[in-house]
Image (tube, rainbow, N blue to C red):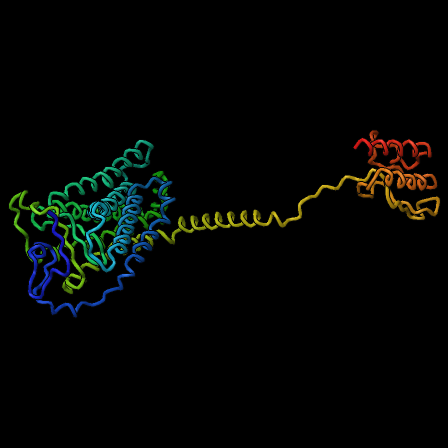
Length: 454
């Protein structure tokens, strides 16, 4: 049966047995409560986590194109862990309620997997860099790259999954909930716990340092032709990229060693718990430990803050090494160009309704109106306008159109108008400036017939 510990159950001078079994030993004397320092405002924890999760994403595109499995593994694990920590800080802000049990089961296992995934990824990266710098293999073929990718996947993905499954062996109860921090994985501190949970990450860290040292020795031996050696290796690495990857791996491993050392100190400073039997370790497995911050000693609270900040700091270290390189600057330029292109297209799309669109001319009138000519171009003083310069206006009635046509034809009898260059064979005869009077009469008749038909 689940056992939930609330602050209301904690009376002065008493300590529940469930809390005595946890890794956070709470003193019966509550005098320390006023000495707890505000390490950082709790509202800033999720903001820092989400910002750290975003910082690891910029190098993702070019490492994906290069199929760099170790670096991609570092990006994915740091993104996932920072994201889950941010969500936990929001959900359990100023509360220790036992909620989202499935979410806590998943996120605590991801935290366990990240403890070994990051050292494993740095180990794979340094192993690859050492092989490139050595003389064992001059060129890298497609088969070699594919084999190396499968090895990297097995180390960076499969081993963390196995590691998360093995955590069940030393998992005394489900998990702990710490106010403002959320779910925390629980370990049964014992000798088996050290070998299962900490031995392999320590070995990966030591292996990373050894491979980095060997790669540096290879560089010293071939420093005069190292750039040409990298070009001949078909690895796609330049000296700048090579040393950036090497420096990032070393810094991350130094940071991981510091975190592991401090964690081991706080876990084992009170001694090891006896491993009696499997049944004894998992006797109260369904329990969820709940710890308000006011009931956590000062030292333990500081340690909790430090352990929480290790993940954002790891993300920031990764960002520093890859955010200002030539590849990053090129990627930033591509993103800016893409945004600029999208905004330009959007502006053009918005400006189309206000633009001056080509308009169709209205149908021209079936009769010329106000025909005027310059006196220098005509043989008479008549003022007539060209039929092609007029716009079509439907007359009010056929009689009005006929009377107007008669006046126009009368004007055409006394003036010579240059022939219309756009007139076609299908145009009515009155469009010809030299139409005789008889044709004007025929045109009037045709126009009257047309209006009656309409």
